[in-house]
Structure formats: C-alpha cells, structure tokens
Image (tube, rainbow, N blue to C red; front, top):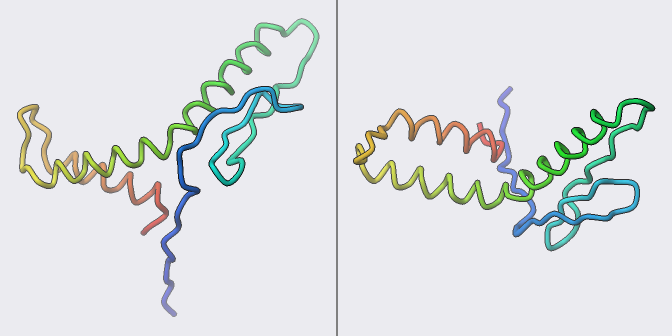
Length: 111
C-alpha cells in the first residue's frame, strides 16, 4: 500500500497581528480570516511577574506567526540563490542550501 501526500498550502498573506480581541491577547489574521488567537495566561494571586512575562511571550509569538508567510517566501528566495551559486562570498555552501530545503519541506508539509 502506497501513501501519497497532498501538497498543503497555507492561508495567503499578508498576515498581521490584531490586538484587543475579547478574552485573548490578540490574534493573527489573514485576508480571509483569523489564523490563530493568543490566549491570556491564567491569573494567580502573587504571580504578576509570571503573568506579565507570559503575556509578553504570547505577543512575541503572535508577531512571529504573523511574519511566517514573509519568512517562507524569503527562505524560498535564499534557497534559489544558493542553488544558483555553488558557494557565495560568505562561504555558504550546498550543505546550507540542503538544510534550508529540508526546512522548507517541513514548513510546506511535503515529504
């Protein structure tokens, strides 16, 4: 029995962070809808520092997620440039290009 993998695609960009959504820290929105919501951490008495740090991390995560389509496109461009040149002036070789290609495969869900 053979297993086939369908190519998956993400929601088209641009994605951007949206703040002030009820019950959340915010969310990441694509042109056709939300990608994800960042939940507020649970508040416990005497843990305000932990709570504030978790809120900061959730916000940073949201911005990272929102930049994913741009990062994917940049990785594709870099991979193509590395494939076009056996070795760049900075010493980047085919090994790094292979690592970028493996990352692109994991991002796109291709095997």
